[in-house]
Amino acid sequence: MIRVVLVDDHAVVRMGFRLLLQAQGGFEVVGEAADGETLLRELPQWAADVIVMDLTMPGLGGLETLRRLRSRDPVPGVLVLSAHDDAAYPRRALNAGALGFLGKRSAPEALPEAVRAVAQGRRYLDPQTAQALALSQFDGNTSPFDALSEREFEVFTRLARGRSVQEIAQALSLSPSTVGTHLYNVKQKLGAGNQAELTLLALRWGVIEA
Image 1 (tube, rainbow, N blue to C red):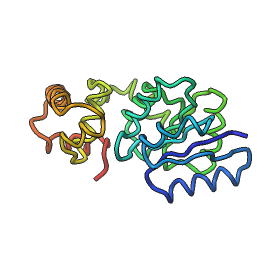
Image 2 (image 1 turned 135 degrees about the horizontal axis):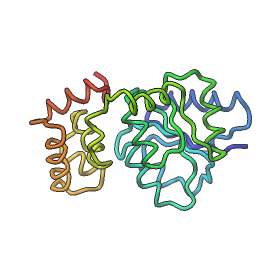
Image 3 (image 1 turned 90 degrees about the horizontal axis):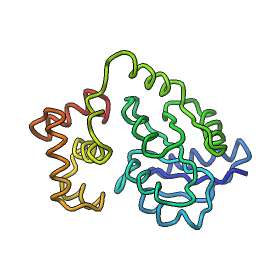
């Protein structure tokens, strides 16, 4: 029996994933969380084998949660689910410690397959994500966000979604001045002058959805 924790800020999504796994057999959903803070707080009592986690959540967010999970011992395998097709997200999720990445547009039967792979310690990428990552290496169409550090990318995506410096600082447990420094570096690296230009860049490259 594979013990699974579901992390998504939409209760109906968690319910759908739970029913899908239970219908397959061999899975037990031992915990659910709507955000990264709850996951990090409750994880020790769940003794999970796999965490199935969305990237876009209120509060910490998926990438920051992955970063903080790396300091835990032991750490369950993490399967990230995301609606983002841009190669920047799966690349950063894998670099941050995720073992698998599954697009939310994948066929329903892909979820149990992905959870089994991660539970066995194997990498899992859905075909569309694997192709996007492979093509990004060879077609020369590199993302401008590749120049951003992990923290800078996290600040950038939150700012592009309309969050204030104060809100970002609170969510990431940083000082506003530190967030301001990251923001300055982001603007310099991306050649953007203000928040509106950053948002347009994020929309153009599919990092956020309109």
